[in-house]
Length: 92
Picture 1 (cartoon, rainbow, N blue to C red):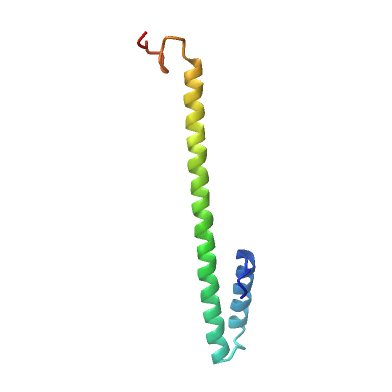
Picture 2: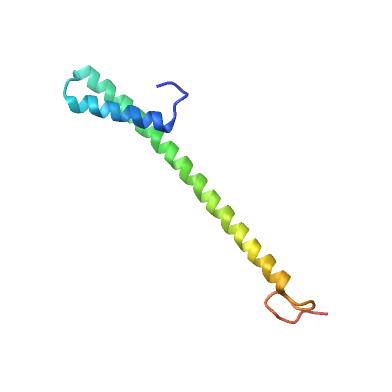
C-alpha cells in the first residue's frame, strides 16, 4: 500500500484480504503475500489507534487542567478581600 494510506483505507484492505483468504481461492504464494500484507496493515492500524488514544489522553488532561484552573479562579473571585480562597483569614 502507498505511503499515503489512511486508517479507513487500511481497514478496508484488511477486509478485502480476509474475504480473499476465506474464499479458499488463493494459492499458496498468494496466501503468503496476503498474510504479510494483512500483518503490515494491522500493525499500521494499531499504531494509528495508539496515536489517537494518546491524543485523547492529552485532551482529557488539558480539559482537567482547564477545569481545575477555572474552579480555582472561581473560588478566588468568590473570596472576600482579606481572606484566602476557602474563607480563611489572610495575613494583613
